[in-house]
Structure formats: structure tokens, C-alpha cells
Length: 290
Image (tube, rainbow, N blue to C red):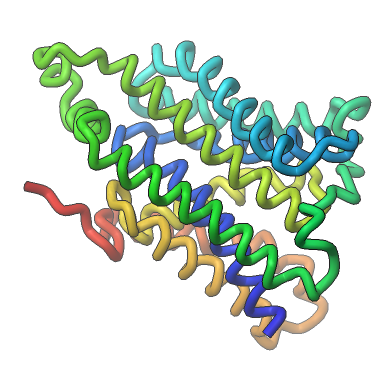
């Protein structure tokens, strides 16, 4: 039962992370391959703040704020590029962020990571706290879902889709494509910061190895598999991917091949992502088009 609670908590965290990317990829058409960087910024921000003795709620708020601010600072220069070049720029930023976490040992402790990250006092530690942390994650994920649902169904959300389909039409309607893209990046980065904060306080230990290209592929797979540009797609995709990932642990793999499991898993997810984008780009839950 405890293991099932663990998987559901992970799925909720990745649901929030997938929703953050879906706002940019699915609704705005921005292929952001550096979303894991904002995930990391949120995790490290709340870890450093709470380890310094401040309360968890303050760490979570600051994690979202710092991730959103980072998204704003990156969005303007990156959005001068378009198409594949924007994707390459964000991919480079994601790797730069990981290297920064790795090398700035005075702050992040480099490859040793940050252990002992506290959970909210009312949750406590240990296995007995899993139901309470599940409730904590569920409430924050539902709030993020509710906010995104209202955002994407508002005139702002409809304008994002216009920008995605044709920027020239958006300009003809008096909409600034760059302004909408920047706001989408900031909103998505803020949600990624929330996911990072949940990750840090649940695992209670973070290191640069948590924010690699494999995590980026995993997030993309959640969005594409579930259905980009839909509100329920990232939810379905995240739960399917996380449950499938955990099922791989029970495969009868010889012990001498265990060291190759992570690399093989990344290649399998990458292959599935390519096949989905070629064969069923609309995902499990297709976007409703009027």
C-alpha cells in the first residue's frame, strides 16, 4: 500500500510538471526543451530556504517566484529565435542550469546534493507520513489544474492558440505574439517551480542528477502521450508514464545488467516519444477543434 501511495505522489508531481510544459507546447506551440531547468530552480530554491530554517510554505512560494522570474529572464532573448532554434536554445539552457547546480558547490554542494530537506511539520517524516503528503500534493495539483483550466478557457488561453496556429493572424487581430509567448513561458515556469518544490520536499534530497535530459524526455512523453493542448492530457500521460516506469523495476533483469537500466529506460522513452509524434501526434486525448 505504501508503495502505491509513493507512485501516486510521483504521478501527481509529474502531472504538475507536465501541465506546466503543456501550457507552452500544447497551447502556445513553444517546444521548450529546458523545462527541467525551472523544475530544478524551484527544487533548489525551496531546499535552500527551508534548510536555512524558514517554513515550507515560504519556500514553496519562493520556488514558484524564482522559477517564474527565471522564465521571464530567459523568455525574451530565447523568443527572438523561432522554430527549431528556440528548441535548441532552451535545451542548451537546461544543460547550463544542470551544470550550474553541479559546479556552484558553495551554494548547491555540487554532486553531493542537498540532503535533509524538511517536509511540512504537520506531515512529519517516514512512511507513516505518505498519506498526508499525498493529500498535500493532491491539493496543490488540483489548485494548479483549476488555475490552468480557467486560464486556458479564458480569452488569454484562446489567444495563445491563435498565436500557436498563426502569428500573423494574431498580429492582425491586434495581439502581440511575443507578449503572449513570454507570459506563457512565465506561467509554465512558475508551475514547474511548484513541481520542483513538491519533489524536493517529498524526496528530501536533491542533486544535479535529478534534472537531466532524461527528465526532459519524460516530461515531453507525458504531454505528447496524454494529448498536448488539452487540459486532461498531461494528467493521463503523467500517470501512465510513471506507472509504466515503476513497472519496469519488476522485470526479471539479470543483476549484471542493472547498471544499464537507466540508460535503456531513457532510450525506450525517447523511441516511444518519436513514434507517438509520427504516428499519433494528438495523443490519447485529442484536442477538440471547432
